[in-house]
Length: 303
Image (cartoon, rainbow, N blue to C red):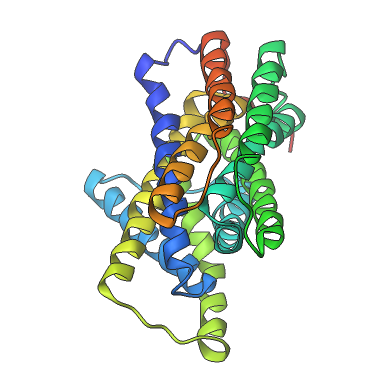
C-alpha cells in the first residue's frame, strides 16, 4: 500500500457504496412519481449547489484545468455524471432496486479491465480471484431474485450505466494525482448540468408536468447532497488513494444495502441463496484488502 495511506482510508469506498446502496431505494420511490430527466436534473442541480457551498466554506480556489486534462473532465462529466445517472435511474425504474444493484457488481470486472488497458494497472492473481468471487457472488445472488415485468429493459439500461461509470472512474483516476477530489467532482458535475438542462426543458415542454410534494422534495435533496455530492467526493477520494480496480472491488456493499432496503421498503422478494452470494462477495472484499499491494498514481499517457 502507498505510504500515505492510513487504515481509515478504507472507509472512503465503504461509505460511498453504503450511501449508493441507499440511493437505489430512493430512486425506486421517486422514479414512480417524476420523470427520469427531472430526477437526473434535480439530483445534479442539488449536488452542484452542495459542492459549491463546500468550496466556499473551505475557501478553496477554483483551479484552472490544464489543456491536456480537459478531455478527462469532459469524460467524467459526460459518462460518469450524465449518462451514468440517466441510465441508472431508468434501469432502477424498470428492474427494481435489488436487481439493479446486483448487476452493478460487474463493475469490478469492467473497471479492472479498463484500468489494465488505460492505466496499465497490473491484473495480479489475487485481483483476478477477487473479481471471480465477486462476479460469482452476483450470479449466485441473482438467482434469489424474483424478476418483475420490464426487467429486461432495466437490465440493459443498468449495463449501459455500468459501462459509462467504468470509463469515467478510470479517467478520474488519471487526473486524481493533480487535482483535488472536490474540484474534480464539482467540475464534472457542472459539465453534466450543461447536458441535463436541455434534456429536462424538452421533457417538461413535450412529455410531462412537474408535480412536487414534501416527501419528493426531501428525496431530491437526499439524492443530490448525500447520494451524489457526498458519494462522488468519497469515490474520487478513494481513487486518489487506491487503484481504480481496487476501489471497484467494494461494489458488493452497495448491492447488500440496496437489496436489504428493497426488501424492507418495496417488498422485493429475495431467496435464501442470496446469503451464499453475500458470503462470496464479502470474501472478495476481504481478500482484496489483505493482498492489496503498493501502487502509485499513474502518469498520463503521452499527449
